[in-house]
Length: 112
Image 1 (spheres, helix red, strand yellow):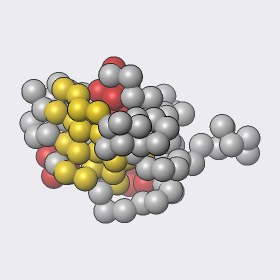
Image 2 (cartoon, helix red, strand yellow; image 1 turned 30 degrees about the horizontal axis):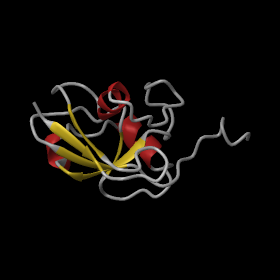
Image 3 (cartoon, one colour; image 1 turned 90 degrees about the vertical axis):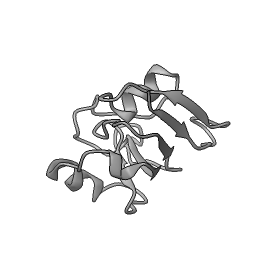
């Protein structure tokens, strides 16, 4: 069973975490099942960027992002080559190291 190591995040996961995840589940679902409250304003439908994460290790074990995911990633805060939407990043057979960005763009919570 692959492991996901979440690097420390000041608010969401201050001490970091290491969790087990079933292959075939999304990084977001694995996080939520283990009490790591990554934002997901569109309820996992690939229609926003609030669940944006960086896959620091194991990126190549994930399937390629869809065109729709790529389009939304272009709008994410702090985009880098390791960026994925955690609702679309499906765990494969390798362990992952995930960093949750410091900021997210959530038009609902920011009252826009």
